[in-house]
Image (cartoon, rainbow, N blue to C red; front, side, top):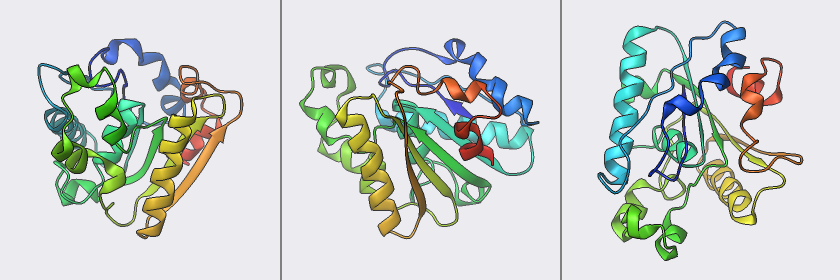
Length: 202
């Protein structure tokens, strides 16, 4: 499953269908959900939307599940494998791999940005919905993937998740894709032989 970005307040699944080509070529089914957006709903509601989409996909297709998401989507897929997530432990147990691409894992810095006028992230939301402040469930391979040409904050966010979750016992990796920026770092999902697809599904 691929979960799109857009800072939780723009875009939908229709922009990203070409990225399914890589996993499909490897014989995998791919789901790309949309979700409700801020400011109509809050981040906890969006997390619940993604959990519901994963549950529906799991009801349709058996076997292991790999999750990836870009930017805000990276936050959302990471959130799904935390203790106390809106996804049940039984469904979390089917997840084998998560690749957070340029994900936002510590939400506290966003409280000091203009976009928080739309996101409405308060201290409680940052603590409850920020994966870097939560504990991951056991047994899931986690890759924090980021472009080498991205802004420092995106690289810091990726390193933060990999380092903190590794200290909590998770199997994590930090990957910096050379010369990739925030908007082309996801392009390799369309290539079945890319390192990004290999990180996701082996």
